[in-house]
Amino acid sequence: ATNDKVSLNFGGKPIQKLMWGDYDVVPGKDYLYTIYRMMEADSSLSPGMKFTTYGEALRVKVRTEDPSFGTHGVFFNRGCAGSQAYAAKFGEFRKFHRVEHGGHIQWKSVINPREIPVPEKSKEALAWLSRGLEEALLGFISKATGNGYQIRAAVYEFTHKETLQALADAIERGVDVKIIRHCKYAHHSGDDTLIPDDATRSAEEAIAKVAFHSLESAQKWQDDTFIERSHSSDLMHNKFIVLTMNGHPFEVWTGSVNFTDSGIYGQSNVGHVVRDHDVARRFLDYWNALSTDRPGRSHDGDSMDDYVEQQQPDLFGRIVSPSMHVVFSPRKTSAMLQWYAGRMSEAIHSVHFTEAFSISQPIAEVLKA
Image (cartoon, rainbow, N blue to C red):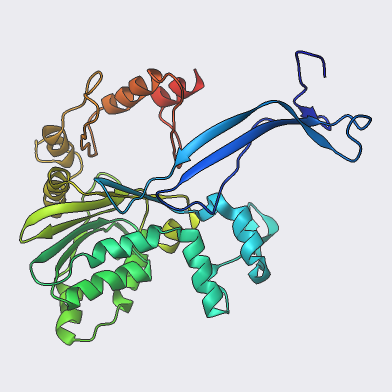
């Protein structure tokens, strides 16, 4: 290295990014992280050392939030983001299996927390992957303690047995539970037989497996709890729960997480509790509109895209901060994506953004700039 430049090559391979996770932080605590730049050590000056520090350290102070208090509670799981640490902790339970992909045979290794043969270790692995996400979800449902409470949920994938059991238990303690679920069928070729898609079929199977102490509750679960959402424009991709007391909504659970094992333990996801009566009311109004199974899009003015844009028109320009705006889909245009891109383009220091599958063009162009 010269006096003013340090090579970012080690062994001919440039260092392009660094990902690091601290898996031991707890809520409501202060932390100080110290980050050093490293370079290959001069063996004549530092015998036995492969690397040495370069320049001044960067120190970052962080106070972790406590999601149990305040208007917002945000719960991130570890999931696949912590895969290396998970493998280090539970690697003794790894299993190998053969899969075929694109005509090629491959060997895959899996540490399925449900299949760990030691019950205590299985429970520990599930809790480690969840990182409080599952516990927060089940705790949210348990707030509906009995008569007078209502739970109004909208679900896409719906197979996580602990969540289903928590909702079933709510029915048994007298809570009024209603769940809108994604329900799509296609005609079997050659006859009129209807074939459910994977999400619909899996949910039906999981719902049927739930057991109850009383026949009355079991019948209510099967016959008077679920509302099929079959006329959405595509997927009914909602994942939220509204809590109400005597008809007055007071909290909502939302976020990216599907109510499945993969959503809670595998994929990187977030659950978001909003403790605000007005926000909860808006979610309940949206739930009521979904419950009529009106089409996602149509030209007669009675579709979900008409409804959501009446409830919250597209935003324009900067908004007052802090403030909360509830924006539902589907929407008729991409104007809201343009709005999000516009806000990102105004960022001075950083943009913190997560996505699952693909990024819309307006946002991608801002992130590349």
